[in-house]
Length: 122
Image (cartoon, rainbow, N blue to C red; front, top):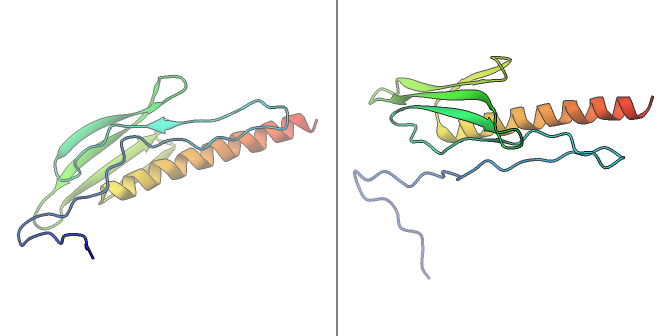
């Protein structure tokens, strides 16, 4: 049986880096879709980077991710700010940044779906 190779001493394991975040779609009973689909370019959280977060449907920047890198003592981190600072976080790992952006996307889409449902019931 082939087992996955373990990283050699001094070699960093390969980290999961999705190419795009995808989207979660919501729709009303009338077939209209109110959604936000956020994406950003993958980055190496071990070095300094600034990455814009883009709404795929409008093409507009809705936030940014600033990675300060990590050092031997785990200093640094990644700051995320979305929708004019309404949703902000500081995380230590790339995967946590992806999770935060997915979470904000889900919350915004759910709020839009609830608002649409309330409008449709009137």
